[in-house]
Every structure is written in structure tokens, then in C-alpha cells.
Length: 192
Image (tube, rainbow, N blue to C red; front, side, top):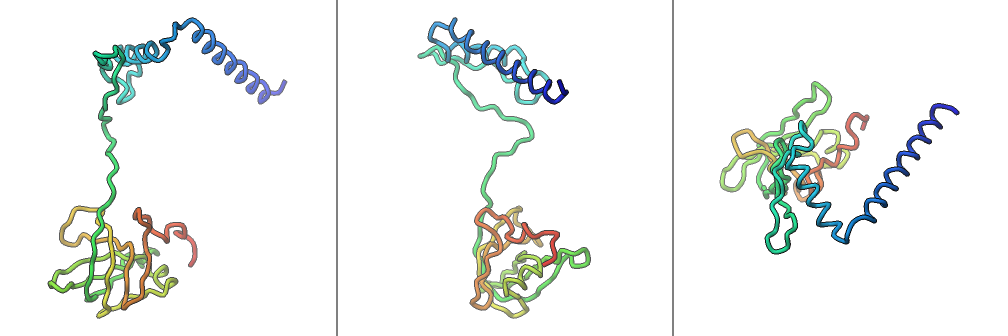
């Protein structure tokens, strides 16, 4: 027998063995399979099962006094941050400066500085220059722009907003998805 067939045969035998063991164990249960298995898992976790893996050494699950069943509890796992959607902001104003950052290394991200009606200055990150050219959405000094942008970072001087959609002199241009994914990301590294 070849080695690949031998490996498949051993895998099949082990799989059937696990399936048989599960059926045999299930027949000896007295109908409280969920309660006893949940209690077994709670005892194993409380006894230190999974030592060395963060988050698996949770204390034993407390029992629900009314039903005598383990209750689920939320456990904070170090290093994981809950997902929260990025906030969006509306912007509107006249472009005072256009900068293309990173053109010397090939990506050429366009940033526009705008002044709104309250004389507030905002930096808006748009898209790579080639993407804007393909859309026919060129931005220049003194253009009137409006749009919706994501704030991925904490507000501060020099921290840009990332345009989801921008209207340049009345022409709308979609730059990012509703989730903030750059619409040009599937074209990175390819020649436009």
C-alpha cells in the first residue's frame, strides 16, 4: 500500500472509532446529556484544562440555582478588542491644498485640505491618484467638495478623515465601501 493510501485508511479507522465511541457513550446516558456534558466541561475548565492557552483557564461555570445547570458567563480574553464600527462624519468646504503622499514609492495617496464655512480646516484622505483618474474625479485647489468620511483615529491636528464618498464640483465619487474598505484595494500592485 502506498503511504498516502495508508494515511487515508488510518484516518478513516480513527474517525470511525471516534464516532463509535460517541454513540456508545450516548447510550449509557440517562437522558440528561446536555446537563452532564455541560457539567463535565465546566469541571474540566475549572480543573485547569487547556493550561498554556489564554482564555481557557476560566473558573468553573456557576450553576443556575433554579435549574441546577451551568450558566454561561462572558470571559475577557487578553489581546482581543471588541469590534466597533468606525464613525462617519459629513464634510463640506473649499479645497485649499492638494497633496499626493507616497508617490516616490509608488502608491500616491491624494490628500485634500479643506476649509469649511466656519473656517475649520480638515484633512481628507481620498484615494491613490490613479484610482481618482480612472473615476474621472480629479480634485484641485479651489474646488467645492462635500461628502461623508470615516474617522478611524482619535481626532487631532493632522489626523485625516478617510472619504467614503466625495462630491467634487457636483460630481459624486465613491471611494470606500460602507464598511470602510478601499474600493481600489483589489487593484493594489497592478498596473492601472
